[in-house]
Image (cartoon, rainbow, N blue to C red; front, side):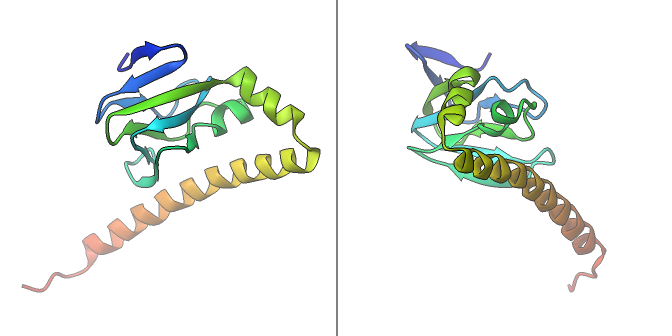
Length: 134
């Protein structure tokens, strides 16, 4: 695996290393202690950049689904994994309205990611068909 344990519940990833790939089992979300992480669509479109103090990878374990995107260390980074059990317990303890909002946002996030990649592919196709001026 491309990670190196550096302490209790702490993971270190070197610049350019994959944290997870689309289709991987999703047992953890990650809190970024230091560094930056890029999130890519299956087709390689950069969907977002995650920085210090932010969490990513919460969608899969929260919805019992595999990874829908790829996460890669943009810089050397230290991450704290949040296991699926802890994540689900925190959601269970939240107000029912907050739970519904989080679930809705997570489902919409996936839809937006898919639409972004589709738009990107169509844009690339149209761009490749246009004449280029010399």
